[in-house]
Image 1 (cartoon, helix red, strand yellow):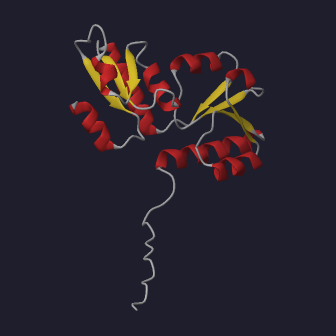
Image 2 (tube, one colour):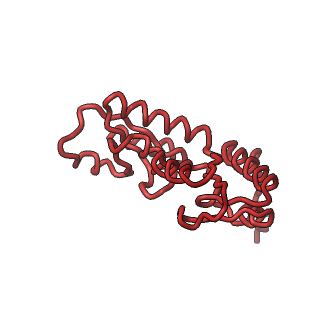
Image 3 (tube, rainbow, N blue to C red):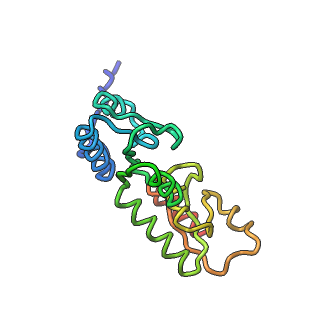
Length: 179
């Protein structure tokens, strides 16, 4: 009888968060320590251990602007729409921790819309990042992962610009664009 081989475990060379999330967490920790606590609109990152650590230094997550009690709100690394940011700025100071990659996608959406393109965001329409990107298109866009939703547009826009949610799989995005 042959002996079973032990499973091979390989440790990834790099682990952890992307630079945008690390940057957001660092900024949030700094602001929370300076102010003795702060609120975030939505979770700055989808990681319970990190959220617990942040809660211990006074970071409180709120899910809508009506729940904001303090004078300063930190937005998540996913970004927010311009309309939402304007509503918050009317009553609170805003500290943005939007990931630079997300900011580039937001800028691209705004530029496309201003140039007359209909903006398609390949991604989860309910995700905060996608809402923020699509918000830059000023009503001239759609978020979907289903190419049939694009084909069903009536009338089909003459000029279409396609962007991707930053966390989508590049190969899936390329396939979506081909279709």
